[in-house]
Structures are given as structure tokens and as C-alpha cells.
Image (cartoon, rainbow, N blue to C red; front, top):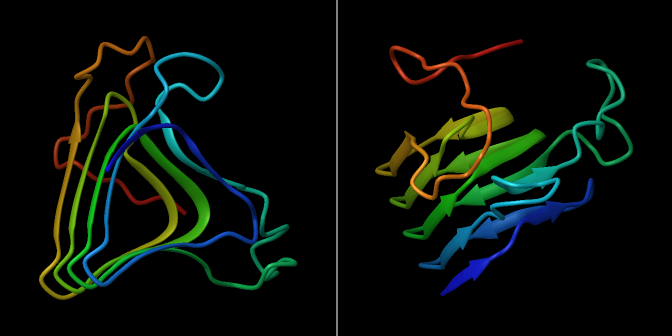
Length: 137
């Protein structure tokens, strides 16, 4: 299944792909949310010591031999993101690929994230990283 859309995730939202589910999505090429594939509220937690109104664990989960393919940024800075259980995750974006609260990899999951502009989207490229990942606090 393939869709052209951005997914806006409300502060109380979670995304679960499990038990062999498959999702193949492509982000918009224009507009305010161009190149944003998944968008989660960055203010879900009012302060570092607070759980906010929605609790401590907003989730974005791909688990159990599931498959997620996306073209655009995964921007869910208040979410815990789990890739586990033999799943396949493929993402590409000319800018950042994943901005999350916590990123978890487990079991035999295959994650392939590529910083590339395969659709010629007019967005500013992110900093190129020698080893492909950066962790910030």
C-alpha cells in the first residue's frame, strides 16, 4: 500500500505497525510540511521533569516482522520510537531522517536510513555526518 501524505500525530497519538503490517508513505514536495513525513507535537512535555498531560511514553512502534518505508523526515521529538522484532525500516530524506525523544533498536530489525534527495525537493540539507548519526540532549 502506498500513500502520498504527511501524518500529523496529535499529542495523544501512537503509531503501531505489528504482526507483519506494511506501510509505504511519501511526504509532500511543497507547502508548510514539505519533506515532513511524520509530525508529532514537540511541546507534549512542558518541561524535562514533567510527564505532561499525555504521560511519559508517546509511542511510534514498528515491530513483529513489519515493514515501514518512508520518504521524508520522521519528526516526533516527544515520542519513543521502537524498531524491533525482525522488522524492516527504510527511510530517506535530503534533510534530517529522524528526530525523536528516544530511539530503540531491538532483535533482528533491519534499519536503513539514507540522507538523499531522490525527489528533488527544495529543502535545505542538514549537516552531513561522517558516521551518519548524532545524539543531542
